[in-house]
Length: 476
Image (cartoon, rainbow, N blue to C red; front, side):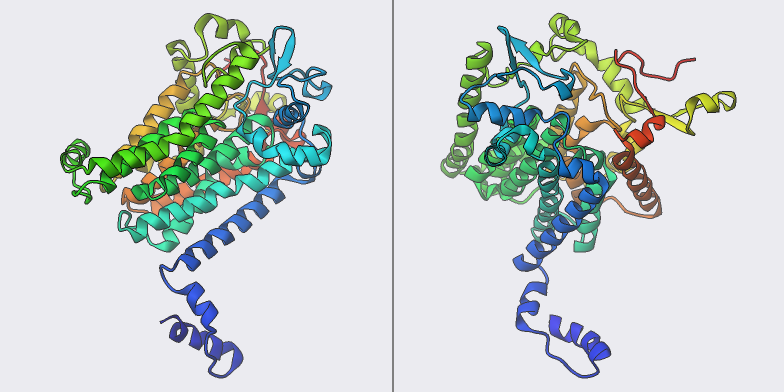
């Protein structure tokens, strides 16, 4: 089928009939696994090249100033959990935890696990280019997202064609705040890059509950990078319910669909699937509980020690905790209402730029207006509702977190559930007309600006920075 389509092209350029080699025919055959993986590989290569170009030589050739994960890996190599010599001078004591007179890295540890062999080969954190390492990993998420979208298309759970799936993948990679996060390389953004890649793999294995153990293992890697991603395990549970029910076909209505599948559930294979999925997760809980107990005497898998950070706003964490309704108004305001500051004409010289961006970040709908289309799905399938539920739970938790994500170009915490939102765009059946294309161009333009400009000295004039984190909006 492919050969007759390509033969006219070969004739045009070579002047005679040429038979398309069988190898290419197999690779290009519609809906073939080789084709899907080939396109995913191309997406990875293009994405990583763009990320490297935008990141620039300084972030690629040397270590970042906030290479916390490399220091954590180095500590493990010396059979300790604390930093022997305290925080490195070049990090400005930024986000290190202090407990019992020792200095610790309080970020969830999986990114450090990945860095461990490379730090060992380098010999020290300063000889390891952590920013470059993170960029190599950051391109995994977009590539696997394409495989997820294609899986949904082939199983007829999405009406998008292959080209639309490529476009949605590109918009995630370059039209969301994940773009600026991916090229930073520093500890906070490294967690997003690793977490997104692991979450994408977990979701791919979760579809139709095909690979329970691998899905659980990938989720273990995801939540030990970004704990809020643990909530996405609900997707696997619902997929397992669907697979092991005699009513596997999705019906309209999320609750009616779930109840119908429960009534016809084959319990033995369902329980076996859930248990297999849970094993690596339970192992990760046990390991992290022991890890946190050894460091902070806290027998909890989630007590990584952020409350011990020696930061300006430590008092508010001690008073209100890491998660509280107290933080919701501020975080909600930033997520929904933070816009660029336009300077008055008489103050243009003082601003030094046409606009300034508060480093609390820009509103989510401003940087990626594509998300507005999620409000008007053409079809609310059970999968769509499940993804929306998980994303909403994650968003609410993050909105009640003690930090808005500062410093950032856009609301970086949205990267924890952005994959789910883009899958929703695929299965929701929304019409991608001229308005959507305009929103896509806007998203690509602004996020390219963010990736190029954020935390670059040459673009400092575009950013407003205030260390107390109390100034959210432009002063009168």
